[in-house]
Length: 202
Image 1 (cartoon, rainbow, N blue to C red):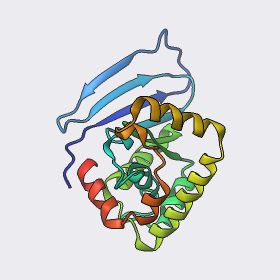
Image 2: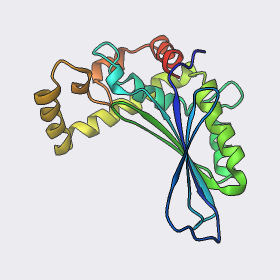
Image 3: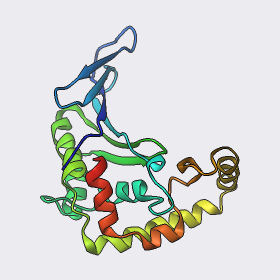
Image 4: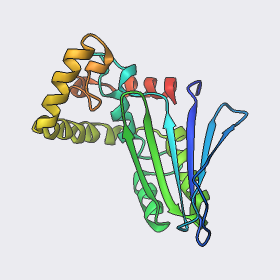
């Protein structure tokens, strides 16, 4: 799979027992093109890793509006070596907080875990990012979940305000489209479209 869109890894180390004078960030460029931003904070014995994929709703159009957000959902549905149930069970067993968020220009994947289990958390996170299989029996279910999210969003006053703002300032551009997607697009989007997007940007 081509991975020509780089990732930004943000690792926040929270190791027990030491005080640091000020928070400083180290920027490290890996040979594979990944950029690591390392921030240390020794106040708590946990580590957080945020993987930022440089793609979001601004890479969409009316034919695939919401595909970034849908893909984010689908990455939690199982990989070549872990079913969704195994993924959730392993995450719970090690006490890993595992979540994601889609925005206009980026999609963020977050794990937070006690420091002794960071290798396991990163193994799960990388497995989801690179080896997801989008099980057919989960695809329509995720569509339904997202359509419910859209319906809930529409009922919020802030959603209408955002729509008017985007229409005024971003009309005719991808920034006029909602990150969550358009109902008709989500209803009609195919598994193949999502896989193609995944292979292109991840």
